Amino acid sequence: MRLINQKPGRSWRISLAMLPFALLLIAYLAGSAARLAENPQDKLLPSVTQMADAVDRMAFSEDPRSGRYLFWDDTAASLKRLAMGLAIAAVVGLCLGILAGSLPLFGASLSPLLTVISMIPPLAILPVLFIVFGLDELSKVMLIVLGITPVIARDIEQRAREIPAELLIKAQTLGANTWTLILRVALPQLLPRLLIALQLALGSAWLFLIAAEAIASTDGLGYRIFLVRRYLAMDVILPYVAWITLLAWLMDLGLKRLTRAAFPWYEGGRT
Amino acid sequence: MSAPARPPEGRRSPSHGEDVAQRQEGSRTSFIQVRKVWQQYGDQTVLENLRLDIAEGEFCALVGASGCGKSTFLRMLLGQERPHKGQILLDGQPLVAEPDPSRGIVFQRYSVLPHLSVLDNVALGLELPRAPLLGRLFGRAKAEAREQAAQLLQRVGLGHALDKYPSQLSGGMQQRLAIAQALIMKPRMLLLDEPFGALDPGIRKDMHALLLELWQETRLTVLMVTHDLSEGFTLGTRLLVFDKVRHDPHAPGAYGARITYDIPLNLDRHATREAVAALPAHVTSALKTA
Image (cartoon, rainbow over all chains, first blue to last red; front, top):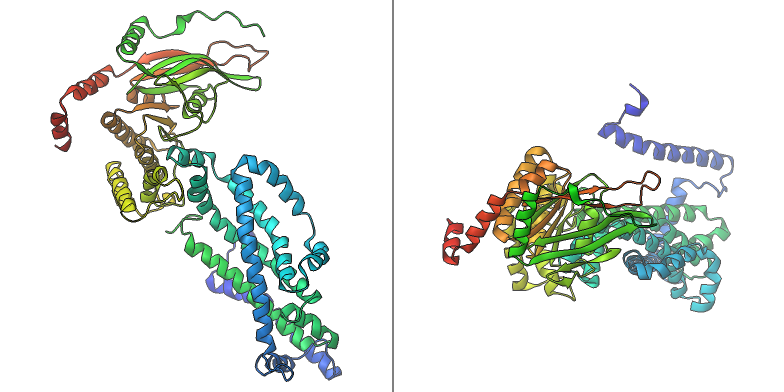
């Protein structure tokens, strides 16, 4: 049988999905063991026990100085910024996208503007944000917002244009005015697209969050990673990175599930 | 470009048919009046000098080769396009230049809203005109709208599928839904743009029967574009053939199509309906419930 026609069964698919992770883990453990055998003081590839100790220290025992559990504080601070950034970007992006994509008069001005704005590298204007919004929460949230809003807005605009003209005409023959047409025809059809756009923007959102926290912050997952970097504390950095990855993956999964549950008609509908 | 002399009108329908058409028009005020309408896109002339009177209650089948402007004509009637020259009058008034609830439309595809259930697709037409701010009704008004929509859906044979989404329906059922959606508005004119073009022959026959029944009941003016000549002959009370009579091989876009044949059809059906309409109301309502 040709390779292109061979498809894995269910159990095979799960095993094949696990395989690369297992290989990476084995490679790491072997490398770590080899380096530690040579030099027990090695910090580059900490062993599992060292990392477990670090996690225990950060997450399950009080910080001697502040009396708080740093790991959970960091997580809460980061997630709060991320959620605010994503929520604002989603709402603004959706509104701009619908305006630009559904109303040709607005699109004529908005479309070129969005295209140009989306070309500005958000990290390049991070200093501007710090100057304008100060060094506290607002500037970090704004970086996420500015970073992903144009992407979401352009995606929604494109999807709004793809709504068949027949449907817009039909809605008008059913008595819709511009506003109710957007409210009852365009918006509901674009909401699942918005969730998918958010899903795709998650990666960038995390990037901007970590960057903002690394530069000016007193807590947060990104702040902690960059702080302990000074002590080459790989035993803290690696669990933090794994935790961030897990959170991002769960969000991605959650958005996917939400899309399917909230919009059963989307992509084939419920069967 | 100098306008060449108009060709002789020798290609119109046989004089017998024309007489009948004239008499029909004379006996009623015409509902749709098309006055010397031209349509062109850039250099491409699509329709030239279209003149037409359509009486209320007529079922016009528009046939012709692809690209000869039947659908363009339909889009102009819908208000989706404006004539380049000339005028279309509806009841003596110039046509509203954008789609509105007085004109229902069924397209070949994308006629129904994918994100609404079958019931809501039809109820939407009752909600939108009455709720200009929120686009939806609540409470009793909503329940009444849904009840009315459900009755109409029952009538077109979708009573069993009220809660389904359009993507779960077959092509024929989707078109039934599209027709119900258009009819809930009680439009004065129903425009059909190759509504059954994508359906199997068997399903198509069912749809023809349904459409004729609805036409008999509602006394709508129907204009239907079709590729299928026999469909046009079966359904219409009037067949309008669109064709290009003039060709310039050096400038293929120079001349547009016009109506070359205008054939009255199924006169008996017209007469039957007239007769039924002439009956006193208590008799007809008794017949309908029977």
